[in-house]
Image 1: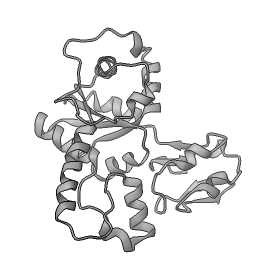
Image 2: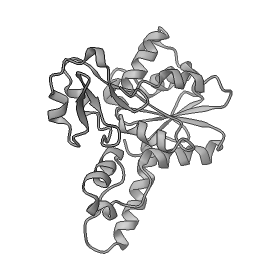
Image 3: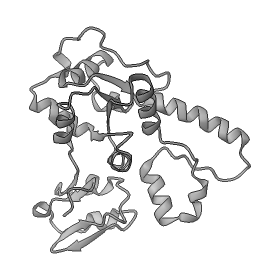
Length: 241
């Protein structure tokens, strides 16, 4: 059991059903001491094992306590919020989700889509000048890891660009200063890999499930919260959602 890795097994909850082993695309799970253990060096943190585990034994690292601590350190902490928040929190408006996150202590909330826009624009320019062939987006860290580990012959086909979230972190740091902290919030376990590998750019990554739990622990009901002054996405609203 390795709780430091983004995906792990809660040993006492594992029913030894082999379902995660059968579904793992990178064969990164083995039975060890009677439970299905994630092999970190083989895993790409896609999270599929978490989704298929019938016992809920496969977990995504929580990181809420680290986020709480980050908010106590006295420097502004900004959220990079994945566009899919609109599906995860269907009843909330932009103002409500921003207000709820600022109530938790975040200095501001920005849309990761701003980074995606920048990467899309740069990708367009790159492809315009590129020779014909295979070009694979660098957007998904799980996909990039899978290619590098299991089909390395295609590694050179990955576009030499930052992922949208890392590009977005760069935008925020240029706008608000490099002494800020940035926390990504979205649906993806693999974003935790990016945060672990690039802590100087992205401090932490949380899942929507963790955010829901945080709201509950604070007795915070975003649907009924009163908006604070200036509650909106910073530094601008994304044109692409």
